[in-house]
Image (cartoon, rainbow over the protein chains, first blue to last red):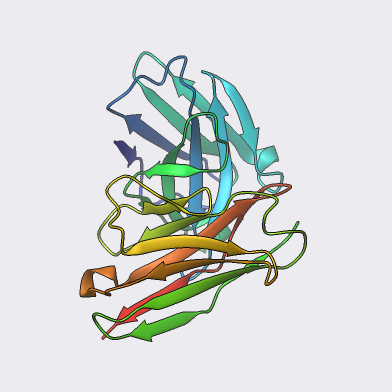
Length: 119
Length: 109
């Protein structure tokens, strides 16, 4: 099971920080990709990035300059930090675990959390 | 990168069968696996179909997936429709990056 947490409102130019708590399996030495996906209101799904094998991260090129995804194995959590946010970053953010060894087979999803950046 | 195109909405009556298409714009649909996800309000999204035609754990056999290389598309078919199947369904594949379809709203009325 995955559960997102973090503030629902972030001011423009500040940093959006979210945590995904993972239960039902250890994130350490895992064969799954731990992923963030978002969906702006009324729009489609966008892959943000992932972390694998305890620390190797891959990012959407369009967000890479502002993005950090990392893992806290002691807390069995992974996190997202997106800097210099604008209203365009308003979205429901999902944390997702892929199938084993599959970078793009999104098998388990969190409930999603709405983050609003006012314009 | 390619695009995946889905119908914006479909509707059908309970007990009937509906098929949702997902057409790949360029490159072969068979190149990479296609997944299907169900988004229902108030619930976490769930995987319905993975690897083109494999039902995810707990998904009833009323749901099936397939690909058609001649049409360059994937399809999700739901038979014996129930009101609980009402949701938005997204197809997804992978190329230069992750690609999602635009989603299809299924109404069961």
